Image 1 (cartoon, rainbow, N blue to C red):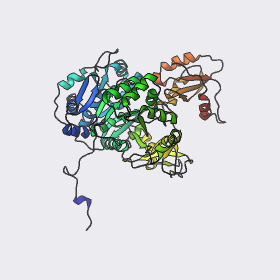
Image 2: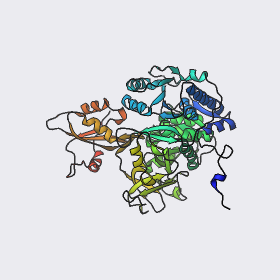
Image 3: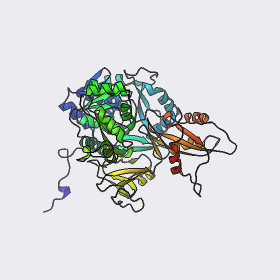
Image 4: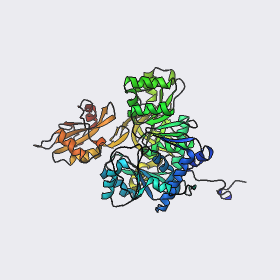
Length: 549
């Protein structure tokens, strides 16, 4: 007799929705007195952090936040940011963490598109957020966070103070009562155009990627994790939930610097951290005395660093190893919760010379444990390309660690999921051993300091200048940021404009990190149909003198 599914329905005894917010409840139950958060003079246990997260949930409910409402968050890497990753989604609300480097215009768009009901904002970012809200259609409730470790300018302007709200709220546990497919986070990505797309995460995907982080890194219980990666970026690659699952320690770092990182490693026994290539380069390029001191207090102890955004070079791998830091290379996008493939090391790699070993470590690798599949396919037939390390196709992904879709953008969602795959837009090859490597980007996205910059967005701004006839923006290699925007500008006949004037124009319309780091005037190379040949400009970009912007 065959078993019929309807004879064995799910119920409270045999089914619970997967949600990463439950990791903190377990940490507080099992390890209530273990250290959870370090920030300046602040030391909080898992029991205390859980209680504060529940107070946040209750406070938001009292302010009228309901299931599906968006709570926008603009915070640095502080304890409050950790608490938001649990206190917001546990009540069924959607957390929307914003890039703290964005300008008011971009923030206004996101507030309106997300229909933000509440904004939680750090005092440092109060001015730009106040300007953004002034121009927004929505008028969210504002909760101020006045971090004790911030001593700069900025005035609180909200109706509520974060600490006062928590103090007036109960610590009673809240158990997530929704479905694992419910939206839990909204992250904006610029993609290939200047108009950002809202990437919607579900509880199930965040849960599984948080667990995958543990499996890929062999993350031990009570790991000491340093927050160099912004928690606003793909929800910190899901690591707020990963660290809770391991009852680890969140060492908050408001300002990322070589001294700050080395001091944290020394003072708190940091075991793991994540970051863009610029973070790791910052460490190897620190003053000699700083690096020597770091090697002295590590005394042979290894620290694990995770890198994404660009492949680590042989020089970087070798230099980091001398410091006592082992790099793990991962790849991902906002649409897949951060990293979802890993260059998993194989037996024998470590015996190779650094330069040869880097060739293997430079690949984007293989799928995460809990991601269903990753492949490289022909863009026309959608069939896998040969595993020869030469045939180029598009890198595609599928499985539970993929977004629900783009908020209020069904057309873009349909394109992204065509043929049952998530299409990354990255072009790559697959080797005989199954490892994937990026060869080029079909999207004209510049990755500067780990941040995605749309070349089209910059071009649109430059086109607004009355002297500009044609413009093309490409990536220029940069020793610190990895890449920086480089603009090639063709002027209208008889028009005159200086580099300084164009930079000033860009600064009036773009956040600082998107302003071109180099500009060259001249005729742009074009095809017979008038299409600008960006591949020719990429070849020239390295020789263009950089500008101090």
